[in-house]
Every structure is written in structure tokens, then in C-alpha cells.
Amino acid sequence: MSDLPTPTITITQEQVEFFRTNGFLAIQSITTPDEIERMRAAYDDIFTRRAGRDDGMEFDLGGADEDDQVAVLPQILDPLRYAPGLRNSLYQANALAISKQLLGEQAQPHGSHAIFKPARYGSVTPWHQDEAYWSPDFIYNSLGVWMPLQEATLENGCMQFIPGSHRLEILPHHHINNDPRIHGLEVDEGVIDLCPAVACPLSAGGATFHFSRTFHYTGPNRSDIPRRALILGFGTPAIRRDQPLDLYWQRQTNTTAAKKREAAARRQAKKEGEKGETVKG
Ligand SMILES: O=C(O)CCC(=O)C(=O)O
Image 1: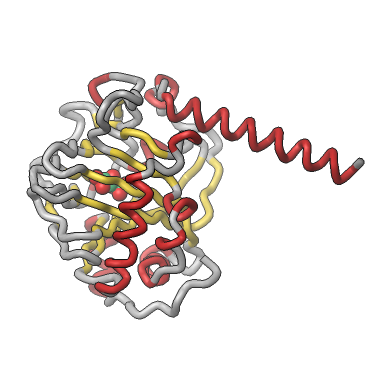
Image 2: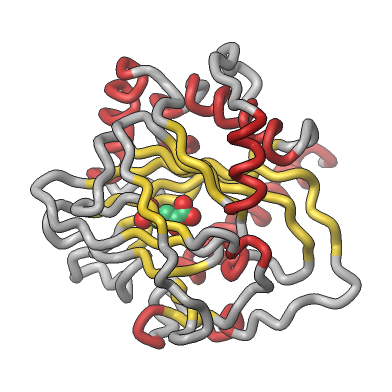
């Protein structure tokens, strides 16, 4: 994030308090319409060419991710790596500045992903806590910033949150449909009351912020336009736990994408080993 523009937004103390009390916050604008238009072209391009698929970075978050099946919830991890048009944005600059207000000055970028809900059949992103996906070895002070690249509504899958749920432990999750080939996780039925859910419709270029333990969900896309979201993570340095948590659902994971990522990491390690040999030799 070295070449970021100067941030243009600060939030009020009242908004900081709202976030700390409820575990989420919605703001109506985090960047400009021009930037959204530029980003939308770059975003559509990486989903059209399924950038990162061979390395396990593009996959179906909501399905078994078979090559011959239509993906119901395509996701790309680290989309900025594949799309120069998504880099060095005012969105990143403002998201970082606001994250520092919410988490403390030490807040730094902590991953990014993009989730695309195809028009008419894009599926739900079930209720979950982000930390259910993360390493059980650390204590986090992190949040996600979610920005839609078109209007986000109840009809196409805007974000919904359970107020105050950031104060809960990580509750039991399972793979969607209890199918370990599916990357997406869902909280077990009945362990949390979902009635208090608050929906946050937004204009293009608005944003929500949520703590990494806040329960959130987006509905299916029943509209005639795709729903695009670009998500940035931020956090202060994670602290190692004395005793790891038992997030047993992670041990059940058996996705094709995870295997591809492991193979890509082995290829990269081999390449670096060979480079080291050349330098020494
Ligand atoms: O965009 C979505 O459908 C879900 C987003 C999400 O789960 C997140 O930002 O953590």
C-alpha cells in the first residue's frame, strides 16, 4: 500500500462508538464514482478470466467447485495481485485511515478478497464469523471493510449483521451443506439468535466495517444485475495464544482450491530453492 493517495475521510467519535458497541458500521461513501467505474472494469475482467484459478485463488465459495459446474458464488483471494486496476485506490487509503480510527494506529492491511454474486442465481453467503476461517493460534483485533461496486440491496445481497455479536466466542461452524469440498462455512443452526439482524443497503462506493467476530450474512442475488463486492481486511498485530482454539471444522476441509494452493506453495518454494542454489553456485 505504499503508493496510496491521501485519505479524504474521517469518521466521527459517535461512529467509532457505534462500531465498538454494535460490531459494525455503515458509511455512505468511501470513494468516488470515477474510481468505482475504473475498479468495476478491472473487477469484471478478473472474474471473466477466472484469474488465479490454477493456484487455488479463484474458486466457488458456495459450491463444490467442480470445473464443469457453474459457480454459484465465485470468490478471488488477493484480487489486487491479479488486477492492477484495483491497486493504489482511494478506497484502500480511506479504509486504512478509518480502520486506524476503529482499531488503533497500529492497524495494517490484512488480506483482501472479492465475492461475485451472479445475476439471478448468485447464492447466499451464510451467517458466519470471519475468524471461523482463520488460524486458531492467534488472538485478533481485526475488521473487514466491504464495498459494493454497484448498489447493494436486500434483493441482490447487501451485508447484514447481528449487533453486539463481536463479543461472542467463535461459535461452532460447518461447511455449507456439511460438504467438506465446499469452502464456505455456516454457523450451526440454533447457536445464535438471528432475529436481531440489521441489513445495510448501500450505494455503489459505500462501505460497511465489521469486526472479525461479528456475525454477518448476505442473501442470494435475485436481481438482474451481478452483485460485486471488494473486501479489504485490516488488523493490529495478532497475538499468539498459549493454547490454540479447537476450530474442528477446519480439519474437515477438503477443497480442490486448498490442494491447489498447497501445490502452488510447493512450486514457489522449489523455485526459491533453485534460485538460492544459483546464487550460491
Ligand atoms: O460479499 C459477501 O457475500 C460476503 C462478504 C463477507 O462474508 C465478508 O466480507 O466477510
